[in-house]
Image (cartoon, rainbow over all chains, first blue to last red; front, side, top):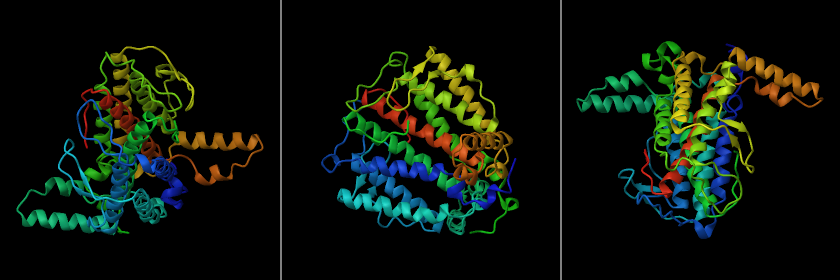
Length: 192
Length: 197
């Protein structure tokens, strides 16, 4: 294994796919037309589907949530989603124009950028923020008399865990959005 | 940034899979969705109005199985090409070509690829940010090839060889993308499919 040279790079430079994937999501989201933002698939399975705009809102919310987690905040202020029950019940979202939703996607992307500028050596470390949230969660569970062994074994989230999960999660939603747009007849950016 | 060192990590975080606890969950998700493609719908190909080539549902599973092998090949240096399902890559607009195989054979190949990913997830967390001997060799060969063609290789030289992190991040992100598309198509056709959210 060659470790020394690579550790000098920033996370974003060393793991170029992170920014490529975020860009890809942004491009596909930007392809949602204003007059289709409330379109929702009428799936034959009878389950709940995000509208096209709700898919973008969910991606923006997730970026915001994870960026805040890295900073040590679990605030939900400003989130589009106002109510989640389970995977089959409709989620609730506050209304916003497509421009506002796209702006929030851009804004939350911006909150992730400083983390991509960190040195690669930081990748497998928790941040001060994830450590703070972990300790708060641990304390709350202990005070409630709950078993904390699983949480303690897992430890605080590392930067790698948060950034990689965020990226993988949004690629799933980006692909669903892209598939729906293609099925509607739009020509959409495709990497493969 | 915390001053935590490797020594401060919990035992669970000492492996790559422990450091990325959701990785196996997402890989399981892909396996579960692929398992939902029935024999009856294996050859079904979407009829989207949009331009470009669509995988059949079975081809989605073939591509996912191939990708596990090919992407890991970047860091292991080993690809059993005779086991790949895709015989001709068509890019984003032309039809890809595939060798034939039964649903059971393709799912077995996906499981084989999964075992290969799991072996990397079991390695020490300290290896996550590192390049491997194979990725260094491939990077050097690529730089040499570009230079030999008289082109500028500075960007690729600066980026350095692919790390285990880069490889696994790409593998899981790529796979979640295709899992999402496959799942959306299965749902649109009324088929029962595993959903996390």
